[in-house]
Image (cartoon, rainbow, N blue to C red; front, side, top):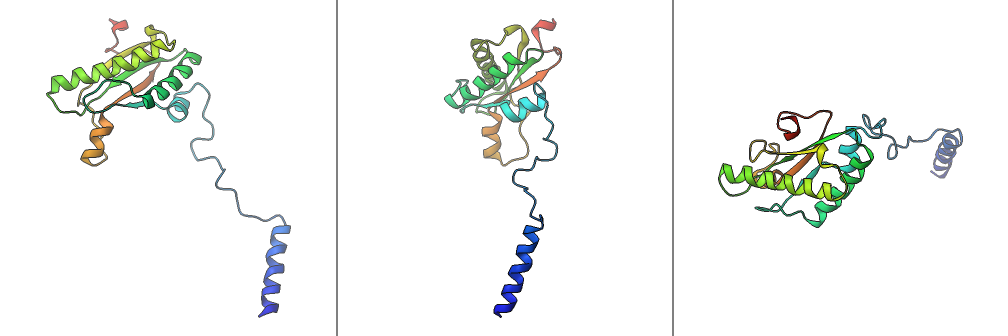
Length: 166
């Protein structure tokens, strides 16, 4: 048995010394993410993050949300070509009208925080969707918390919901 182990050891050592080794898949670039251009929408989504979550019935910006907004503001101040549609969403107790109001208040809170951090207000607008655009690929409880959100979306031009366009 010892000669077999010895022979196997020599073969394995020989393979490694011949330059053959396992590929480094841990540090390999992921497909689709290898060439993200600085200042691109992909960079914003992946490296900065565009979602901010809220507590039930609240439009108050949490400490965790402030960290995301800090990163968003820093990126937006460096990449001034982008316009920003701030989309508020809700899934809280109350009427459809209350949901629309709360989602708009959430968007307004994020916009105020971005402006406070130096982002030009003229690049920003808020649209409150209420419960119109729920997250649908999760269980009810998880979806409710995910629907209490603001999504910061980059745009190249104002859409019909932008007051700047009117």
